[in-house]
Length: 191
Image (tube, rainbow, N blue to C red):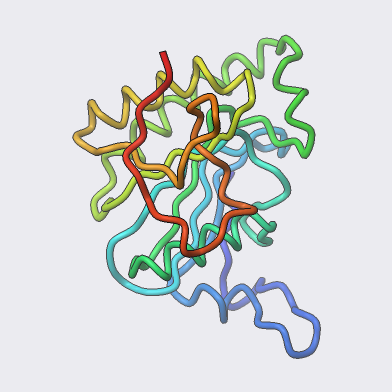
C-alpha cells in the first residue's frame, strides 16, 4: 500500500504552518504494509533534481502523510546539500518508536517483511538520480549485522556509503541531534 499525497487529500495544518503539499510540491509518500506495521520506503520531494538516500535503523511515526523529527532533520540536510529529494529506507522495516522491539524474535510476517526490505533497498540503490547515500542507524546492536549488509549493497551498487560522523565504536551517527554544519564523511563499518 502506498500513502501518497494529492491535492484532494492533503492534510490540513495548524494556522501559519505549511501543509505537506506546500512543503513537498513535487510529491511525498511512503510504502507501507496494509496493516501499517512495516514501512519499506519513504520519500519527500521539494524540487526536481538529484536525491539522497538515508538508511537508518527503523521507521518511527513518519508515513506518507506526516513527518517526524528525524525526517524533518534529514530533509533540511538534503536541502543544504543542494539536493531535491529525500528517500528513506531502514535496516528494519518494523514501525516502532521503541527500537528494543527489534530484538524480539519476529513472526513469519515480520520475516517476510525483512526480506522484502532488502529487495526495496536494492531497488532504491539503483533508482535514477541517486547522488548520495547516507547511513545513519546509530549504535544499536540490532543494526550492526544488517548495517554491514546494507553497506555492502551500497558498494555493490557503485555508491560510497557516507555518514555524518561515527560513534566511538564506529557506528554511523543518527542525524536527529547533529548540527547542520556536521560534515559528511566516508563510512567504514567496524570489524
